[in-house]
Length: 121
Image (cartoon, rainbow, N blue to C red; front, side):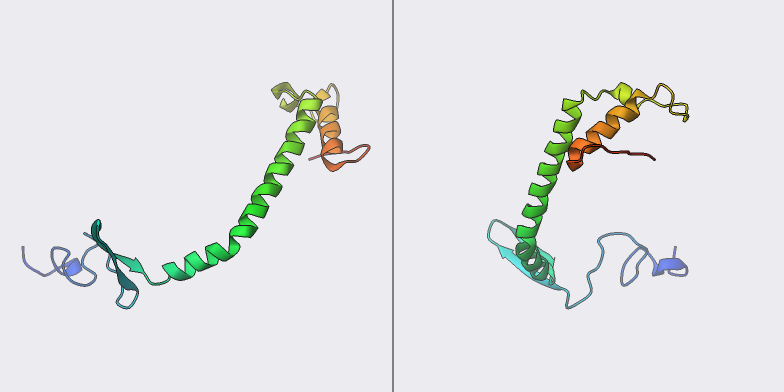
């Protein structure tokens, strides 16, 4: 079949039918030369991303330490009050026989360092 139709044939040239490897616009690539592997195009803004990541590395570590400390505090509170999956079972909505709500309130009070808490949806 000849050239008349969408895509201009068998995927060759610019905008060619979506087959093959994606084309990177000129000026956005450079060659990476490594003796042990073939040359591969890299995007120019890789250096900017690496620089930004390096600058923010301390912030990422600080956030990870905070998340770990908070997770430990939540785990300790749930362990102290012996939370089980039964505490998460459904309720009638009237507050009758809802033993999970009392335990959840106690857990929240421990997590936030208060005497009492009322956690409601």
